[in-house]
Image (tube, rainbow, N blue to C red; front, side, top):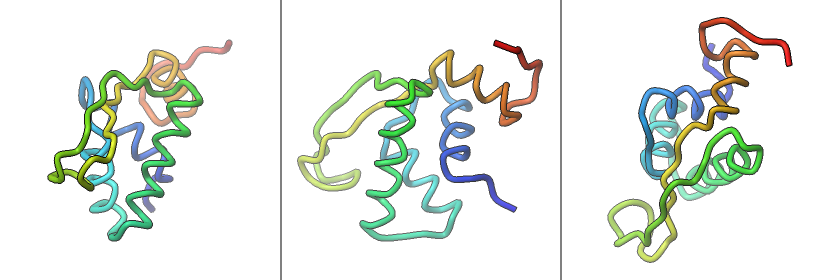
Length: 101
């Protein structure tokens, strides 16, 4: 059984200091055997939701030169937040000790 998609994005981001959205999206597309603009946009929205919830932080941005997703699309670089890491521990997405807040 595969992880829920947002859980996969969090686990993947936890494995690196930071990743660009197109790198996360590409990994998710491969993991879930999906393709096409619908799914690219789906995962972009999922990343926006994770950022809005404070689980990940946008730490950089740039315009796509056409090599990542689409020319002139705004790309974001993400890092897992301390809050996100703690929530992952609390929910069992990461192994380790949980805390009760």
